[in-house]
Amino acid sequence: MVMAQDCCAPDGNVMILACSGGSNVGQLANQAAVELTQEGFGKMFCLGGIGGHLSGFVQSARDVAQMVAVDGCDVGCASAILRHSEVPLQNYLVVTDLGIEKNKDFNLKPSDIKRVKDAVREVAVNGTAKTQQGQLPTQGCSCCG
Amino acid sequence: MEIKVLGPGCPKCEQTEKHVREAIQEAGVDVTVTKVKDVMDIAKHGVFMTPAVVVDGEVKAVGKVPSKDEIKSWIQK
Image 1 (cartoon, rainbow over the protein chains, first blue to last red):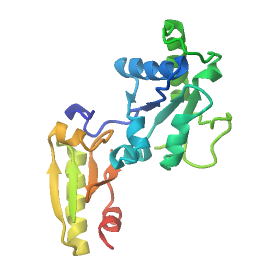
Image 2: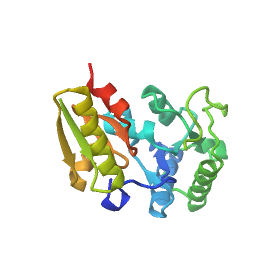
Image 3: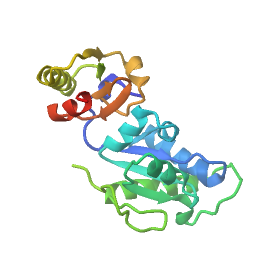
Image 4: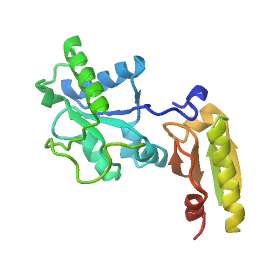
């Protein structure tokens, strides 16, 4: 949601694109994004809008200076959506790569939410970009001035 | 052709509108330019930040001031 005070938002406005899939790790990604937004670290944005090829969402993701994409597991839905919409994958992490096992228990542990949030902050600060396989992407930029 | 410049009002938004109007004049294309300032109307376009430029319903730039050459590339067929 664009607010008047965010017009011409300064550098450092991190776009957070999170999976919200039907598992604990999908919801951990989502909840981490919600809480990081509430805490003022970045802004959660609409992965669904990008997946629906709505131009405002797609162009926003292409033009944003910094983003972090968070998938719950290595099925990689968020990554696939961005690839399909030709949005460069800047910073990326997968919740299961943090050692959190995927299951259907939606009683999320606060400690797990914190782990994901910390990982998002680290990825955003370090500017690392990884594919699902943990490799650096072959296209797109990991740093936008 | 219609171009919308989305932005509540700030130096970058003003600069964007200026670039759009100058690009149109230089290109000699018949284009209607609308400035969208209302926050709710801006939000309907799904943009992450402003300024933003919409050409015939398609968002072309978000969060930056596009150059006149860039704008011309959008409006010249």
